[in-house]
Image 1 (cartoon, helix red, strand yellow):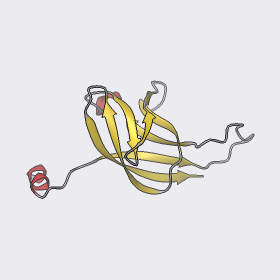
Image 2 (tube, one colour; image 1 turned 45 degrees about the vertical axis):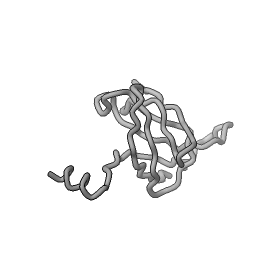
Image 3 (cartoon, one colour; image 1 turned 60 degrees about the vertical axis):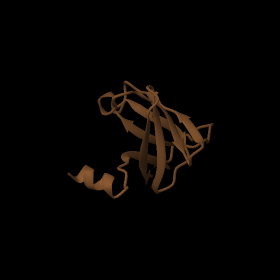
Length: 108
């Protein structure tokens, strides 16, 4: 019933993803000082079709990787993220586009 009310009001539900802005100190510091933020997309069971691409700001695209050794299977790494929320689109292997919101927190 709630889904019907949401559809009637013209509001869309977005999949919530977790983003981490990694500002922790590393000793020795890495030679590559690129962005260390990442987005957790979840496990294989969370997706009916595997996610392959994450799009931020409507134009910046990042490849999704499967990390079988990690707690989460699908990840996007190397992002410059800021605390708060940002909209994103995940494109899946079958061509579907999933509207998402990334909730970002910084870890020190």
